[in-house]
Length: 176
Length: 389
Image 1 (cartoon, rainbow over the protein chains, first blue to last red):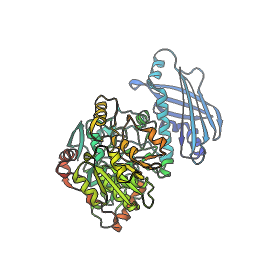
Image 2: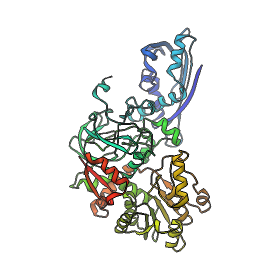
Image 3: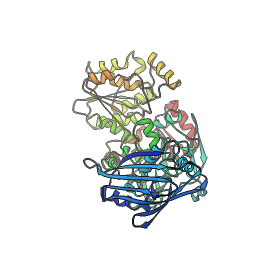
Image 4: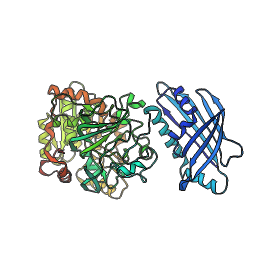
């Protein structure tokens, strides 16, 4: 089982952070392992993650707690391939410091092929990955997009070993 | 385009690389007219600031003309002439809102690495290792400038490149070093290092009202430049103990403030230098804090030590007992360049500061490797190299 709790402070009103997160279709904009989330109404959504070797793992999720501007919680529907649950809390930071966001995620991949794919998604440092996701959330909320450098064409979370030289990409690299 | 690339320890090459592209909506592309080699580039050149990758474009002091803007850019337009601050800052995070631009919370994609090494990350910077984000630098014909509405300063009057180029880094850095000293009437400020940043710290300390400035270096040509900027000078190779000599020059009080404009590759005499150098070679100490130790030791009781020289990692034998028992204040930081560009442009306009006096060498971009070599080895009276495209 994989369980992570991480937090970040974002310089935006609590309402704005909550509203953005409440639309689960926004999550892939900052959660790197998510390919897409499609809302089906009534608090139901369909999640697709990018698994290694270009494959996909997917499940349905339902919203199980919704306290406006305070907390959201969701979990995978009974019988899903991947048992997953998550929650996010929103709190005013002291003074003028914005909003504190604390995320808790739990994945319980089944044994077997799908399980090992999901486990691989998070690599050796799941806690760092979630931290990187929250960094991207902060960038999206504060400046509207994920910051890219010539070395990190994917933005936060590539790490120095995956980075390319700090040199403009070839046009064909950008088409990928 | 042509760009000066880091190719290994003490090896740079001007190579053909792809032209920059807009990667974020707030980017601008600048055609560079003038760019410079910074003393802190030598830390990359010598392999003390890491990690670097073969092919990294160096350079963080540059200016030029805007040739393209991203869809989100509001205030800059094609044709504008701009000086670009070396720190990359988003303008929206809590630190940027508090004018602490070199602590921007969003600009560095390599935040995780910086957090592991430093606890928290500072802002990104141009051409300054992957620790500060892996952004391509400005020793090139063109550069991509993120957050184009936040950083670049438009130059609208008829200043020459040489008059305004150093607003990108070394003039604000030297000025901030002096400002952190909180100079009061009658103060003596001592400045370790008479490289370009040290010279601007001297000029700024005078501008901010210091009664005396004592400048410390070992190269006579640099000490002469310091005298031209209004300092008394001390060649540290002529004395047994630098801190004793500085204390003696202030009749036993010590300078009210001490500025370290040297950083992690300090030189010195005797055993201390040999021990630090050996520890660096063995990789058990990253930085040689010789100037910093002297500054702390010499500083007057209750005084301020202002650190603008670059440090990368761990230092040994920092005299913390001196700091604590003598009520010293240490202030430091990568320069919050954005804060100082406009006021310093006014000082240039008023003739209070002439930044061009530090320039000793003018070369073409294609001569960058030679520029690094003579700057590193202090050949030919080299103080500051400006490259034109």
